[in-house]
Length: 495
Picture 1 (cartoon, rainbow, N blue to C red):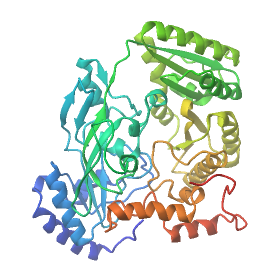
Picture 2: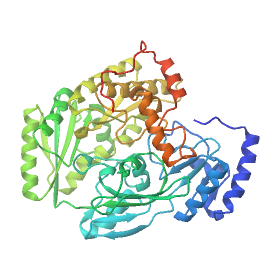
Picture 3: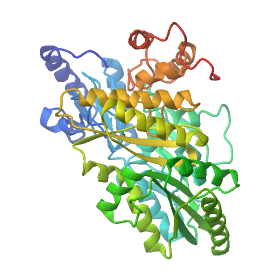
Picture 4: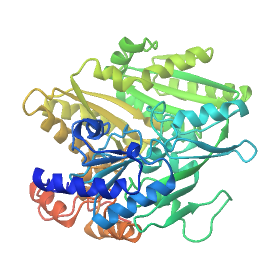
């Protein structure tokens, strides 16, 4: 985080900044008093807060370019923001800086049902794309749990996924082109609506870059045909090891479900109390395995999945009989986060990724950590691709509990690296996992990341001090975590 500035200095800086920005933006596009800017002090990671000096609400690309030019001239940090649903603190303001919201750039510019593409502005909601494409029998596949509210610009920043990313991929697999403005005032288009684009493939670099390279102004996404049929197998297990092995065995059998999710006993119990999805609350774990496609294909795949799940020790199997029951089965998984919020004053949602074969082992280790830290943890997973979302429950009003929750989360991330995984899957690094970057990556690797950022943002004003830790920060973190002079997990291959 940038050091806070004194109220006196901030008052002068705010007056100067407001005057300069009002010269290029209408008054309706600028918020400058504390009452107006308070809603922007955090994103979905509400445990970390910082009041922005100014919030900008530009309405078009030209206004974004003008605002960035002013900020570059005044050396004002810029934090790009979508809907603020992110869970890693990526959109938390920088002290003495501005938040640049793209919420008002919310038009679907073009939808081409023949090319199966949509050109949208960054403030368009994820679900709105599918709603617009529905009359053509198409939809946008990535479906994060926040899809009713999150925007495509934020999805690009975090490389968001969802319960159907196993078959259809993450944001990076469903975006063809990104148009963005750099801090140098240059408009850059990465990717292409053609099968391939000229030059280096920098599109994948921009997707997941957490607003550090440029401000996105337009995105071209792929649309896919809506499946004729979709059905879900809900499998109950009396042992988490069996459930974890079942996930690996389904994939090993050559089956790629549309979605393959796992919930432990605590998460199924709280979800069932919340939405009455029909879950077996006595089961140690529940798997939701979806198949979609033409009726004959779905029928065969459901039979094959059911056979594998039974062989792995499933104590009960239920197959959705119609669309209403399929949506009911999914409702518990989609509402797991708010369900946990009903039984705990606060919770801390982690995000790490591991090889599927280690699911059971990691679950057992997390169970042991619950005893170590004296905190409960409900586990929900995008199990098919090994993306974990442990929900650590705590009470911020109890002294020390949030700190224990943070330590618990850091231990889970180190465990992910230990078994050959990574510290994030779809939530990004932001400020939440920045210390864990020091655990996973070497100094040379982090320097390479910073070199890419400098190439796009020489002024270093876009979302600074997030996602990529400085040498000083890693040194400080290393002093707190002495490892006998060895690099953590030195046996793992480094890129």
